[in-house]
Image 1 (tube, rainbow, N blue to C red):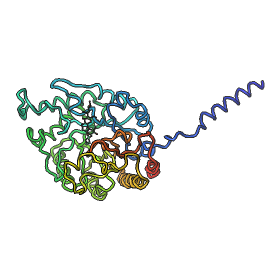
Image 2: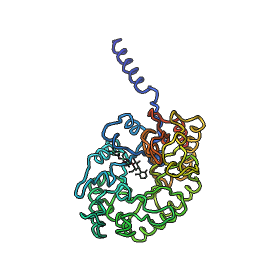
Image 3: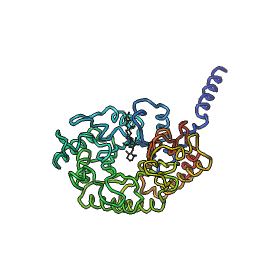
Image 4: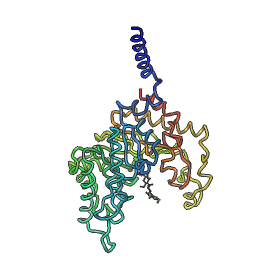
Length: 373
Ligand code: G3I
């Protein structure tokens, strides 16, 4: 009889033990803290997708609920030649997002940079006609969006088509097709997946000229009955630029159009910007020099605080507009993944993201979590 009670006691203790383990450090994570406000996303690179960084993928699973393809869905990557589609990396990206129940964003269908080399030229190397380029755009967008229909929930349909002064970037798309290439891109994407959210995405969206140009573009698409759901403010920031008030003014302007606003590529560089007046010859300003790579061996406490304060300042703004913001995506998982280490000056050591090279959340991340409550 007594063994029965001992057994019951042992079962009770083991149950208590299983429930009473101290909460894992991730128990309160960014994705949990913000789940009723907006998605918290990150960009995945090919090395991560192909199994080269399991620790980074654990950080993603535990802390983020949205992902975007950093490079594997760009034209240059997916379309090595006319008639050829390379799916391996993009398939892995979408499969990872589905396996982890994440909001999956495709980046990017039409972009002047990293476009397929052959896209704009004929066999003789001359520019193709307007009709040929439109057909190539239609084939590309229809084929890619159809493959991931119902799986990729949102697309950066057109990326960086407006200049800082609000004019159209004179890309090959613009030169050959005209400004209608934007409308056509959104139309083709909607034809392929009527349920997918469609976005316009750009950088320096705080600038007044860009703001006016993007507002004009969105209004034009809306007037023509073309579906556009949201505007992506990339959010490649520095410690001292842009002015957060200008950023807020742009956020308000895009929200006023009825747009979902997303912060799509957030990172904050702590390194000197070559655009600050260093007085040096421009070619030198963009060459690596010790003077512009001051934190090779780690940030100073002062810079760490500036970075923390800057992230807190912007997350306060995101919380203020959580009714309009649907996603905040970091442009990379750990500091070692960030493109900011290599641009605009190659070979530097930056600290632009939320997780360090040790895969640990930076101390200020808990402040970002707290402010969501
Ligand atoms: O995959 C090749 C590799 O095979 C080769 O050995 C290596 C060296 O040449 O290059 C690798 O491709 C590089 C790719 O990143 C993957 O690392 C490209 O050269 C390089 O240009 C590419 O840079 C990306 C850049 O966009 C241009 O596509 C950055 O990682 C990516 O963070 C950056 O992201 C953009 C957004 O898409 C749009 N908004 C701006 C943002 C920053 O530029």
